[in-house]
Length: 250
Length: 245
Image 1 (cartoon, chains in turn cyan, green):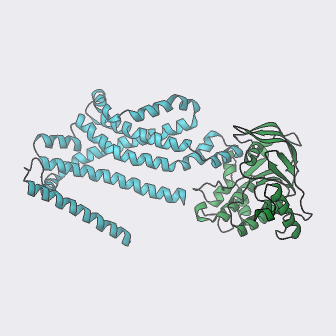
Image 2: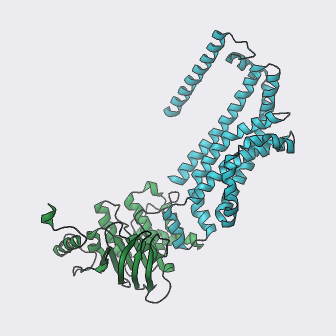
Image 3: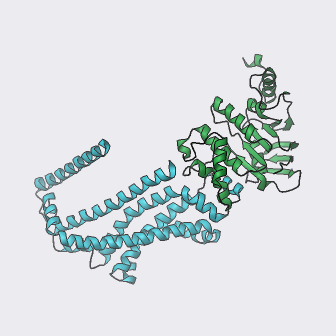
């Protein structure tokens, strides 16, 4: 696995370089630590506040997992429904298009107003933000059956249901993957915004608190934990994408 | 399974302009009927209409089987690009029409057909792991799996290299024996090799060709075949050799 070793090495070099530049900027400019703490201070903040960060990270990750789950499930259901039912298509397709243009993040304050500071408002925000990319990417691909397969379906006398199950869905796997790629980028962002708008727990909440108290190093530490969470999700989707590429296309 | 003869008469109208003027032909029951013509003349449209598939062209006329039963449910189609499912094994690709219809797949039958087309060992492979020729063999096995009396072939061998193409032609001639086959091609050599009956398709209509006496699949290098090929090329618009040079 020299290939993986090479990539790890390359990643480590890039990371070290970024840290060095960060430290250099802090040292040379002499900015106070409440404006920009150096990397070492942030590492210390990570260590000192480990328990606090862990608790809040668990809360945010739980919300994220639930919200993503709901968003992905509803996204797949919607795409399937639109594919199977001409009437649903007629009614809902324009909505799907318009919803793409609405910045769903902007709904976070309204959702918090309606559902309160707790978990439900976060789950709904995350679900909404991930739902549309999943539904739309999957649906586009479900409707784009290649002409040859469409002929095959017709000549075989397939009904819409079997055509969708046996031809359209396997063909649409790449669409689902691109939807998931977007969802794991938007998801953590939605957690953060949801918690900024109003919450009593979570990494976003912790960042606001730390900011208010001038604990900039802690703020950066929370940011790093959130980034790690995003990276974890991103890796999971990449693994899934590779499995799907092997399973479905080779 | 009784293979019907198919009458085809009328004129083919394209989306913008007329494609083929008046014709009235009969594809013979249980034989190889070949339509020969240049690309873009409307051969594929004609075949799609025979199969009951959507087409940009419209037939002002009539398609009918000689037993007056509907044609579309008795038709299988094999096209130039193999149209296999990239995510499914050769075996699954062979049985997909049955599963699409809601019938149970019969693995033994699929295995037997894969053996017939010379892919006994490749049943578990996916299309990307097969050569172009092997993929067309899978497509042929799939066409046979449905056991339809009418088989429409839309230039199924034209993307293959010469040797593979000749082997596939022999295989198809053997395995599709007894069915009403309609093959469209732009290759006179292919038409001469496989046809029991052949027609040249042009803007002006569809006119029958005379074929060598020998039974298909004919030898490609027999003098009669070569002479007939030269004749066909001239009918398709190629000037006499002296003038070409």
